[in-house]
Structure formats: structure tokens, C-alpha cells
Length: 156
Image (cartoon, rainbow, N blue to C red; front, side):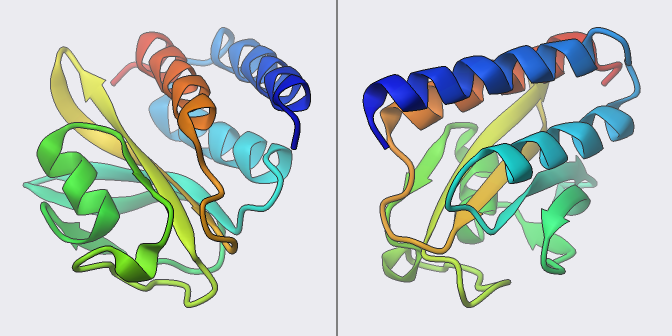
């Protein structure tokens, strides 16, 4: 994927997300729509969805893809690490990530972005890919912008 085509792809995804989020405040509806937009709009991914923090555990929320792990402890796997550190995790090879949780054995790389409500962790956006090193800095930057739109436009 060239830089220009990736730039245009994210421009289009951001516009689509903005259009959906500006008309709805319900976080479940918005998570469902964003998961669908990302799953159907990003090439070379096999899972896109949310985990919501409930009683110090990440609980599966709306997603697109194969069935997934329902509960993830903070600090466990890529999602739990993103939640615990409250930072983006961009993992080129999930099999080299200590403590990786293999919900789908086809996944090879993963990006997880924390979601905040009033500066406190609310959940994470998780995207998996069946190819190694699928995600780069441009993906992280643009996905973070989509997460910010979700945070600003959802009644979290």
C-alpha cells in the first residue's frame, strides 16, 4: 500500500466514522458501527472490535470477525497491556509478544488503542491482521484520530 493510497484510505474512513458518530451518541451503537467500518474498510485485517473495562477486566464489546476471548485481564496479552499502560500497542509479530493471547491462530500482528472517558481508561479498540507487520505509525496516528472521534461523540 503506498503512502498516498493509505492516506486516502484513512481520509475516507475518518469521514465515514465522522458521519456515523455525529448522528448517534450511544456507545454500543457507535462501537458496532466503527467495528464494521474498520473491518470492511481496512485491507488485510481479520478482526476489529472493542473491549470495555468493567470491574478491572476488559470485556468483549461489539466486533467484526471470528468469535473472540470474552474477558482479558489487565496486563495480559496485547489488549491487557494497552489497557494497563494506557498507551497504543503496535505489535509486528504477536507470536513474539510475551503473554500473547491467541484468540484467532490466524492473527500475526495487532494494534490496540486505549479509549478514555474523562481521562480514565474506558476500554480499547483492537485490530488484528493475518500478516506480520501490518500496522505502522501512520495506522496508529489515524486510528487514534478515529478513537478520539468515538470518545468525543459517544456518551461514555
